[in-house]
Length: 214
Ligand code: AMP
Image 1: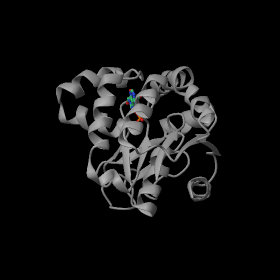
Image 2: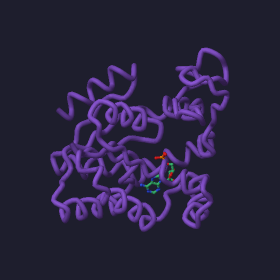
Image 3: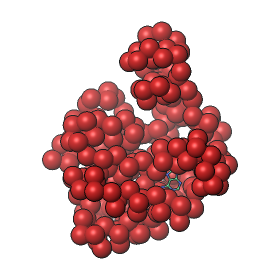
Image 4: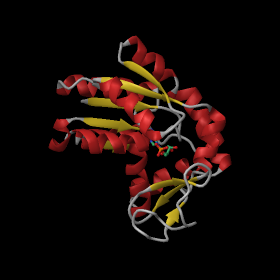
């Protein structure tokens, strides 16, 4: 099972990817997570990416393609993978196509999670992630029972991503419209596209995602 998850920032790709990982034991490859790890580690690549990410722009293709190539060469991905946040523009999508064709492992499906822009702004600006266990909350829609404390592991370490403020969100949405949304047609033309409404409860959306891939 080899899946691309498409959708605006905050559409729920990461949440659905984690559920897919649990259910199908496949590997999640999130370029955003990989880049944030590089920023946190202070590597050269992370230093290069930091300001671009904080401005809500795309980091250069060469950087993300290098990360993706490395991840796809890991034997663990032979069971399948979910690409979450990659590809983000047409040249990345074409490069991915070429890479997977060379490796003889074509995509099974591209799932587009469709959510309107205003809901997305609330979702993103309200998003908090537990720094200890990775659990995800939203201060508008799904707050933890005790403010600032993770329900799952009890840590008082709920963090807001540096690029989750309203100004950056608006520019990330514009980048999405201009550069990433054309991939919807790209995958539709390849008969790989499956669009799923991404509003409503997480489990209902997950059921629709599972129907789309099985
Ligand atoms: P995400 O967590 O997927 O929303 O990504 C956070 C930020 O990382 C984006 O706003 C971009 O700056 C950068 N990023 C993530 N994936 C890519 C990609 N495939 N191409 C370029 N930049 C990316």
